Image 1 (cartoon, rainbow, N blue to C red):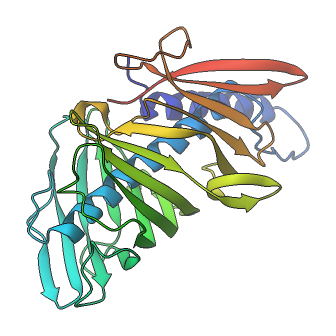
Image 2 (image 1 turned 135 degrees about the horizontal axis):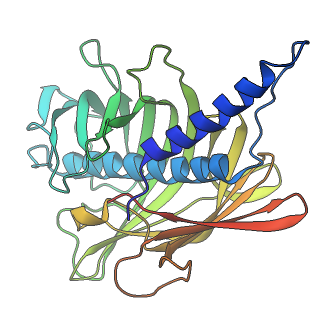
Image 3 (image 1 turned 30 degrees about the vertical axis):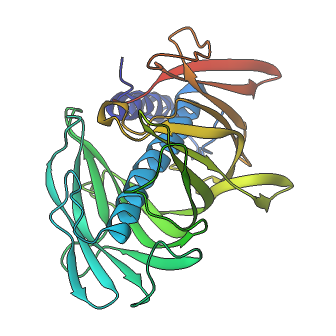
Length: 317
């Protein structure tokens, strides 16, 4: 079962409409305060965390591939274009990708120091999302009806901490990257009013060749609000400030399109919202962690009115 963003938006809309109808009977004006005290908004916040990170991770891995080979072939992307020394343009073709669930579009540029090979330990590159012709990097989930989308703007810095190239990793070897981003994002940018929210990242990502797959492991070391291992922070779709810490290394199989970058295992804490959320990834439909096969999704836990609430959420594939 695939969790559709459409269904989340539909339920939230019904919830708000109900409140609006009852509020219309009151004689005095009241102000509604948005909180995260119900399962609908908790599910939305947790699913957004997965969506934003999955789509960002895939883009970054594309950029790492192109930095290692300027003529690399990337699904959904036109051949990279070296517009000048030290600048490579990445343009996505806006067609349905091999997994059949999404379409990627937009033009983005990679800036690096000419003459410094990307396999050099400490080599640095900067990515700018969008240009004058196609602002932002956008992912449209074509399997939804109607389709939904997420768009990123901003800049990202990549550091090849370990040295080496993704394309020629020997079996058992790993490539380690430091990823820092100052971005904004929006969902469904075809809406009448486009609202962008800040999305900041500071992550360490290791990609290992196991011989049968490329396995990415992500962790972080930033400290915010008394928490360590903070990987990203900003505002959620309800306008709440949040920060997310990785409590168990996030593991993804990035060799298989049908997995759509969904984590095989790992855990995160989404903090600083009204009801903080613990997300545990890689579970079956009953919410039990599995160690083999394809996981159904992830389970979230939060405190609600003095009690503990849980919800199992399916991944999008």
